[in-house]
View 1 (cartoon, rainbow, N blue to C red):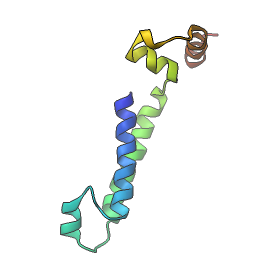
View 2 (view 1 turned 30 degrees about the vertical axis):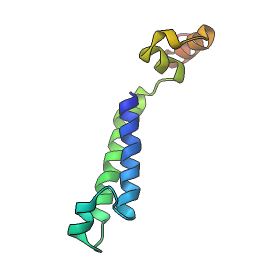
View 3 (view 1 turned 180 degrees about the horizontal axis):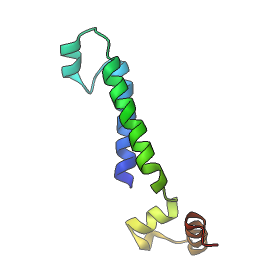
View 4 (view 1 turned 90 degrees about the vertical axis):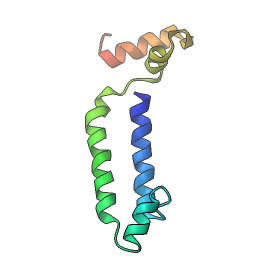
Length: 91
């Protein structure tokens, strides 16, 4: 899940970059020159919306994410249990 969130953040950085200097897209800047970058910005914006629709329902709490990465990182079992109950509506 962290890879998906990281990619979503990267898309936001790319969108801002396309609206500005195109530092991450030198070829776009070279080919487009000073022309309007709006089609590229719109495409990246659609990707951001699409990823949000597909993956926002998979958002887990911090304790559960830690547990998935490494169960031994959980030190507060009460907090972890409460978070799991809330996420899965068990309690």
